[in-house]
Amino acid sequence: MTRVVRMLMIPLVAVAFAVSACGGSGAKPTLVVSAASSLKKAFTRYGGQFSPARARFSFAGSDILAAQIEQGVRPDVFASANTELPERLYAKGLLERPVVFAANKLVLAVAASSTKITSFADAEKPGVTLSVGTAGVPVGAYTQTALDKLPRSQRSEVLANVSDREPDVTGIVGKLTQGAADAGFLYITDVTATDGQLKAIPLPAGLQPLIAYGIAVVKGTAHPQQARAFVKGLLEGNGRADLLAAGFLGPPSS
Image (cartoon, rainbow, N blue to C red; front, side, top):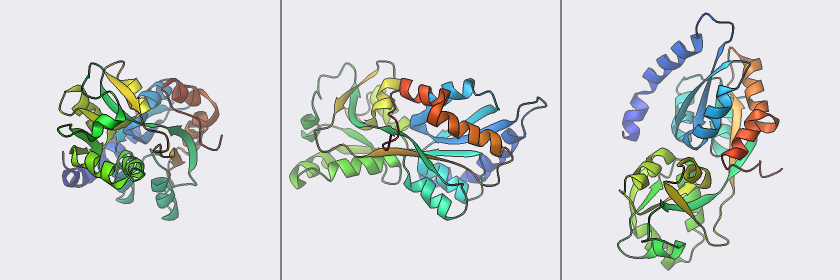
C-alpha cells in the first residue's frame, strides 16, 4: 500500500477509532493506543493485562500515525519510535507533554539461515539487496544517521544496494522472511520478535544511533486517567517489564 493511499484512508481510520472508542456496555472503557509497529509484541502483551481499560491498538509507522492525529484522528495515547514526532504534535497542542519511555538498537538483520551476509561489511558487496525504512519513518531516519557516519565510499556502496524502502518495520521483516531481500536495517527487538526467523548482525562501533521512544496522552481524550495509567505502567509497572522482555532498553536517561 502506497503512502498516498494510506493518507487517503485517514478518514476511514477516524471512523474506526470512533467506533472502537465507544466500546461495549461493560464497565471498562476502551483505550485506543496508536503505536509504532516495533512496539507490537510488547504492547500487545501489556495491553492484555492492563486492568484500568480494554486496550485497543493501531500499529503502523510512527509518521503515518502522527499524520493521522494531525488530520483529526483522536486515539487516547500516541507512542512513537522517536521523540521528534511526539514533540512536534505537543508543540501543535495535540498532545500532553511527551515522555521518553524506552530505547532500542539498530542492527543489520538477515534470515536465520543466511550465509550470504555474515558481517556488516557484506552489505557493501555488489549484488546484495537491502530493505530499509523510508526517510520519513523513524527506522529509516535512524538508518540514514548510521550510514552517514561511514566514509563516503562505503556509504555509497551500501546505498547502491538498497532495493526497497518500506513505510514501517513490519514491511522490512516481511521482505526478509519471504526472501525478497538479503538484509535490512531493523531494531534488535524486531529480530527478537520473529522467534528465530531472523538473526541480527551488530553495527560497527561508532555507527549506532541514539534510539529513543516517546509517548504522550492525546489531548481531549475521554479517558485521561486510564491513558495516564497506561503511560505510567510503561515507566515503572508491568509495561516496563514487558518492554524489557521484548528486548527494549530503559530510557536513555535512566
